[in-house]
Amino acid sequence: MKIRKSFAITFVALCFLSAYLGFADIHLPHDKLIHFVTFFLLSLVFYWIIDAPRKRCVHFSLIVCTMFGGVGSEFLQGFLPYRSFDYRDILCNVAGSTIAIGLSGLYHQRMLKRKRVTRYQALHQFDAATDLEEGTANVEMPDLFKNDQPSVENMTRTSNVPSRSISPTETSSQEGYESAIESSSGLTKG
Image 1: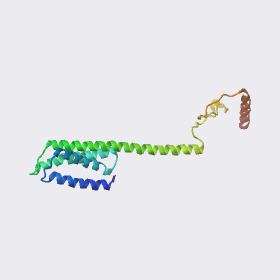
Image 2: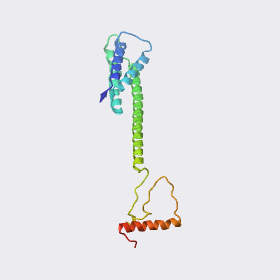
Image 3: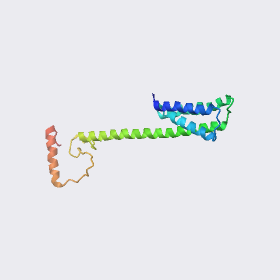
Image 4: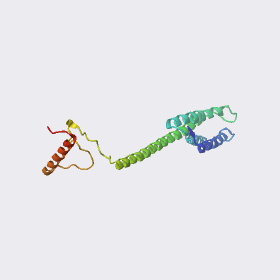
């Protein structure tokens, strides 16, 4: 598990700023909007701190940002003499946090899908180039010993070339080819 330092530094700076705003004796207008935006940004940045699988990032962010940050900070404010506990603040904190984590999770999933598609496209192109070099592109191996006798009919291969019918003049050359194969292998037509 790798830690992305730029996101970690940004998260710590946002934590200090939000702690100052949350625990100081300051009363700001639009308190609920500030709660929503603060926890949206904190959760958005926190999600990307660890370089881990998507599920782990989602679960870890929900526990740390939503539960400890969003709910825990409001309970702490209940113990301060100049701050008060407000369940609507918890709702705004949780809403901002879960929306940020949800959006990050969706983007993370798309990012991984694009990376996977790019990787397999490159692999497919490499395999196709290798097949062309080896001459095995779109070719199935023939069943040479079908009916225990090798013949031209058994030596078929599939390709993208359309098949053609054999004329009567070519049939005699095929029979000559079959007899040449049989004589070289020691088989006789019976």
